[in-house]
Length: 432
Image (cartoon, rainbow, N blue to C red; front, side, top):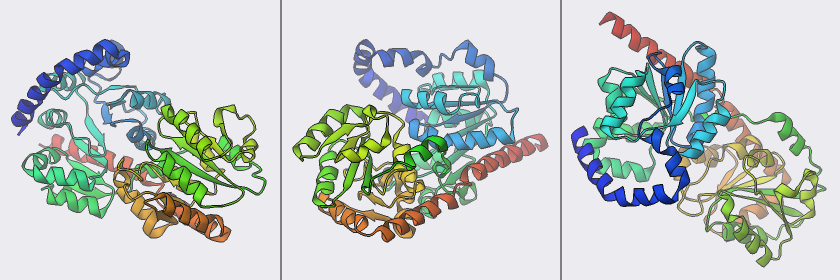
């Protein structure tokens, strides 16, 4: 199977080469990341991890790093002498590693390209003691290199969207082989287990464990400061991670709700959309301000809307909210993580396309205080319901908070499962 994959990989690389060269010429970030992507790991990093039986964790991007961070911290508490390192495929993921895991891991860098001779060389130089992959990150050469060298391979937070499952099932002769490179797959739900079983994964390899994104933490001091903001009798609707094309829907829904004494706080997923949102708010006749201009959080009640134009503040703003609109699901982006808003005790309004957070969204819809809306009119309807009934709002928010609290221990349990796999693997190797 790996020969088929590499055959198509090399053909794709040849076709893509002109575009890659253009990117290298005009994109500074690509040039800076090139050495690590081709497997040239710094001597400093190699000295930290080479030949030390280090545990290799891999998370695709910043979101997956966030899910991985509590697991690594728990694992480090269990095994303080263990050497740990993390790879990611994105520059934002690398920044997140540096921010969240500094002082916990030995190093973090970009995952080398999944080209057989590159990835084999990296695995041979480092000689890791195990490979732990977050979610369904399938890099066949990486997985195969680890398997061939008898390195245990573990998946955590495993998930498979309906769209991905259809693709995998159509080519199950290949993906079944890839997925069975894993020694253990820790998945998010019974639904994910069934999908993996249909793809030919042996059931004894699969364990169900809730998503470790439930285990995130925020700075309680700053959160408490925002939470105690005097809202002067106004209600605050926090629209988080709103994507391109969704801004007008959310703003129109807020305006159409007709709720008096309410403020819309809108956080775009990408800051280059701030100017677009400013124009939409002006067109809607809403008086707005930028979050970066505030020193006194209480000033937000002086406006109809506030735009979050900074990075890393959304989780704190949720704590001052009364309801949350979760972006990414009103168009086919797959949705964004609703956990932070739920942990703040807010009722949730989500779009119909939450397939990237399918299990998490289902938990809140079925057992918590969350609502689906597929248009501005439905957003308005849900906001009107929530803003006019404080008791319902509080009840929904508490239901969501309880769901988060119920599963906060998933990170420590996942860390223990990883440790058990390593113990069993080493025991088998010793007895062999």
